[in-house]
Length: 491
Ligand SMILES: Nc1ncnc2c1ncn2[C@@H]1O[C@H](COP(=O)(O)OP(=O)(O)OP(=O)(O)O)[C@@H](O)[C@H]1O
Ligand SMILES: [Mg+2]
Image 1 (cartoon, helix red, strand yellow):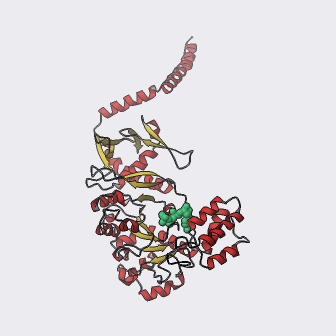
Image 2 (cartoon, helix red, strand yellow; image 1 turned 120 degrees about the vertical axis):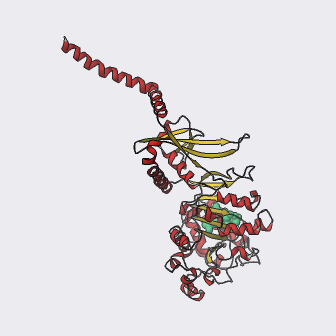
Image 3 (cartoon, rainbow, N blue to C red; image 1 turned 90 degrees about the vertical axis):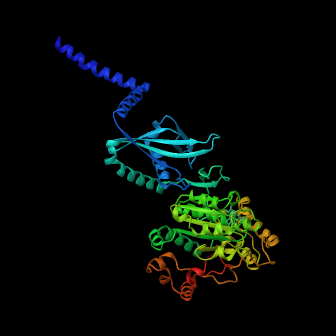
């Protein structure tokens, strides 16, 4: 009898336990139980709170907030949060989870449980006032785990940042009612331009590539020199020659977010400063059509406000690794102070199409490397006719099903419309670099090997010109020119 009883107990006890477990999991009672356990646990421990605010008291971006944001949204426990936002990712099948306002998420590190609250305080009229993450940690765990935990957040967010395929495009809001409001709205950055899709002289493209690569490796150098780790590019040339596309290509190449500053929505110099303070590192800060904005007085920012912005005085205090890009159609009317070395480090000219860039476009748009109509196109280009890459690209896209038709339409357009966008009559390009020699500053690595003194490490202008003479490009032959400002080497 005893044996039978034992056998029954051995059978029923596991069955009962299995049933309880089944019911707990099927009915979410397990979550309720866990909540109670946590509640009791919370009552018997003293906690400490650490706040990671998005903006500092003077409205400056807090880099650590961004790291915590990336970290928290990557935690598997985000799925257990009561309220999570779902967004579509870059690919249509990607779904991104993001913790909703004032929701709590739990994390475990070295056996210690911590809570994060995504705190959002709003103004009465609904505008976002204050965002922060609140970390709650038991006092008994703090000494042992806090430092390594924060380090862990740094490492994980770095890793996410490097793997991140999703870039963001930030657009500035109008002047805020409260200076502590966030000034930027972001949308996914989906520009598909790459350096490979831009028709540009191959040498020039390689020089830009290595300039950008040198820049991202030069943190120590810039800091040793006491300079903000930033580089300013000027892209100039007629409309439709690829300046905006090139910005997209730079962002994709560097994996940087883009902050597109609409100067007409900047109320004054201090507003511009505030905007900059709220940009994060590893970003491209872009002001497009600067010549037009200045010419037509579409900005209330003063020249000195813009110059300070370009100098990076403001940037040096809010994280760095920033590239500023300015575009304009022509730099002729621009105050030379704005273009001086240090303010603009790299000048790149974007001229109209020549035969080489035409061939590049034909290959990209039509998949045609050679064609019997090419000699005719070449002859037309040599006779001085030209068009913008945008116009040629359009004709190719429209006729992409028949390369011959596409090329014929380009020929017709070149013959009838070859002077499109030019100034000063047939064959003359909107280019000021055709007549002026290109002068280059030494690339960053050449400077880096020098001593701590910038001037000591920079060879004389003559030597540099000799050194880089071979790299000079006549803008009438090349689609773009890489034109570092001379002042940089002559100082
Ligand atoms: N050099 C180029 N290589 C490849 N595509 C180009 C090039 N230039 C222009 N395009 C194509 O033409 C279109 C317009 O180019 P984009 O907007 O970059 O010109 P832009 O120089 O910025 O003109 P704008 O001065 O009017 O702003 C884009 O779709 C781009 O793909
Ligand atoms: Mg543009």
